[in-house]
Image (cartoon, rainbow, N blue to C red; front, side, top):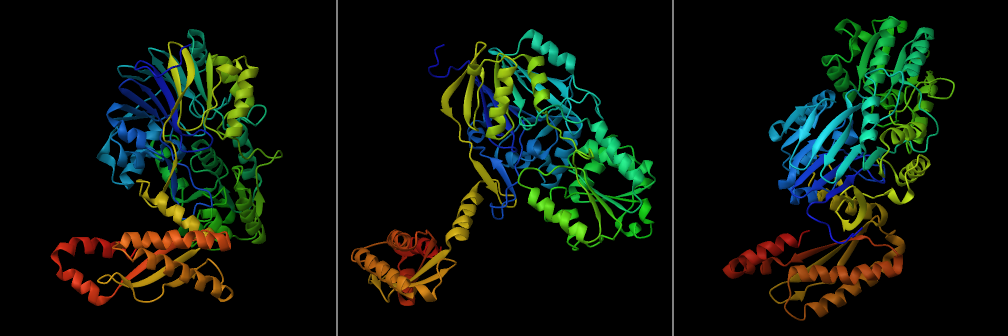
Length: 585
């Protein structure tokens, strides 16, 4: 095939997030003057990202091409698929969001909190819905996941058919609605050119446990336990939350809900009829102490050992309303996400030390099952859809590579499989798929507070330099009337080197800066140039002697008389004000 430059009629497929990582899922489909986006998620930062609240994709390509955007389609209501919507809406005009009933309720609440309710319109969809634009004809099919109303997506284009599974698993005895096996099989019959499929559990062998088995295990524990039950799970796993509430009611326990995200999900799920429990089955924190221990079930967040979640605060004794009492049973209805095992272990130890009996998921008790397909379920999806080309998505690199091997086992030729990174562009042209050499900007953008501009990304880089290398401030006093340095520069450092032992080094550094400035100020210069001279002379010197690159902050003090004479000269006024401001940074 002639894979020269991209044609106007080609269908382009690329991810802005979700490849090489678990989180911030965002997949873009573009043809000529139209763009359809599937999902807009966030990723939660790891501990080394100091002070970062969220990680979102780089939206700059969408900002530049926003006239092309026709729709944002949401497959289900988890944060790694909907959490980026408020940040996206601050940057990009999205004409319409199509979302399932449960996801729509969660998005509405999110937009209300951020006062973004009027930025776009949200249209409810289900498996029978159709979304039609000039180049795309989009249909949907039901999949099973750990949250209600989860959909896979079929995109029909003039170049061929694309299926995106969304997050899915196959559960033959599900708690909610079943998967649309017949529709998946029918799509395989009519012919699918490209399949994008969930890779999260590619490295987990076999079939995942059914959600019904978990319900049974939870019910058994509730029947046998005499004291209070404190149970933690993911707030986003709505089916699990509803089973826990059912088990509590069946064993005559009242439910107290703790954790903001858990309260949100329970409120929405009750409103939409997914949880049938009545008001009488719930109690608040004040009523807990009046109930006998055998009548209490505390449902809370914190199954991953998150320091600020309800369970961690209960474990370390900082929760305002709940203390661990000997005889309490604490159940973790979850498995630690990779990287969280140490945090979870710390919480388990604290709870055990306080006298609680702690139950975690193990081969002996099915207290958790995943919402993502294990290897055999991924094979089943590949067998049902029978794609000509395959692009694993939603997973770290090792997961994508393992999913590639699974696809080869089911008969997809190796050369028809595309392991992509965020920003790689795959082209569908006349039922053939190939990689293009274009790359779309797809860096991580760090969000501090509600700022989605990406400006905080620079701040985070400074924080990392400060954490690793510390800070050096150079104070220089000048008289700008005569272009003269009034005294030697003075260097102050924090977190860089131990000052007492390094007096000589800092004195030498002051001399290096002094010599460079004398040379610079022999001719006419500006505040900006003085600052650059300080940085360019000091940074290499410090690195040579310490192998560290601290943050260098020049501070220029202009003599008062010089400042006053500047202010009197109208021609310099604007120039001076600008420079005076700059000189403080």
